[in-house]
Image (cartoon, rainbow, N blue to C red; front, side):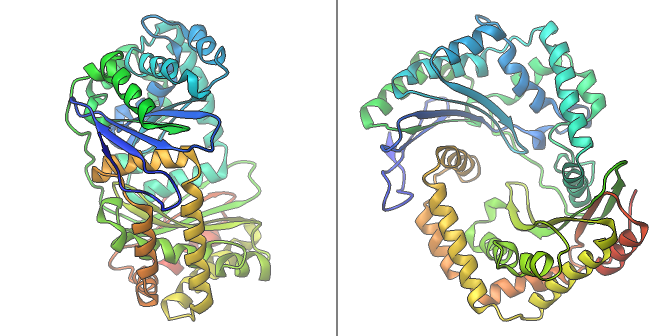
Length: 447
């Protein structure tokens, strides 16, 4: 067992250890909390579904893990958690699947046993699978009928194309959801769930004694210690494509816009990624940002608009999103284009840049106080870097980003011959908005 680098001078040092089979365990002391959070992260998500026929299977596995194990049926899983007053949940993302439970600190050993059973011993009962696939199809229908969700789905496809998993939706396709069989799930888990692809994290009122007991329980009393080591679930890096995707949605009264540009990937480190993160905060973080001030306050084009740099293990996206009325869609597109041009041409950053820097600093420090964010960030660090990053180092890198580096991010967005932007329009999409978007951003449209 060794101590990881302190994330903050104001918070206790996390503990970190690696089991003999390569599974990693991290504990984040939060002595002020009255409850404890336990999560199991598996490095497998939609990015690891290399074949189109597998798209969506990680999400189905996550749902079905709670439907029965070798010793518990669905009802027993729910009762065993709720009898302890615990909340149990899970989620699937592009790069990982995670299982969570939260409750009283004295029940931590029982939580470990329960999550070990759910993650390692799912039985995927046939009758439960048939029912749950119908539930997931209803979830799919909700996404299809939501202009925002549809626009982001089209946006990923515009970024990376549909031949790479990065361009496919986490939930999968309707055809796949209907087609998955129990054998498909068992085979997928057998390939993807191995020790080197698992991080177990716990956050709460912990001390060294409790951490050692937790490590001993995981290694000797659960199946985690017996997991095969396996090899890392790697992702083939996608090539950025760019382009325009548009889809009309019957009954929608708004035009949803998602515009994005290529950004560096997470493994490239803070020196490469933070100028994009700071540029996104400069443009669209908070009501005083140029994006919100221009789009909402001065012109009334949208109730809300956002800008973020989404940094993933496989790549990055500088993303602007907003929704407006069809009658204002062209004006919105022109306003966004003008804002990007203004910053590329050297708009005075001054106070705005320091405002963005402080907002990012506060967000990072606030995240240290939130167990779910701390645990997911720790898992991401271990999967991508093999270590826990120090938030203070991240903040020092943030402070070192110069105005010239931020301006260079906006300048690169104007070089469409180097990396075309990706743009998705969904909902009520007037032909003139689509045509104007293609002209402004140098894109060919696609239905």
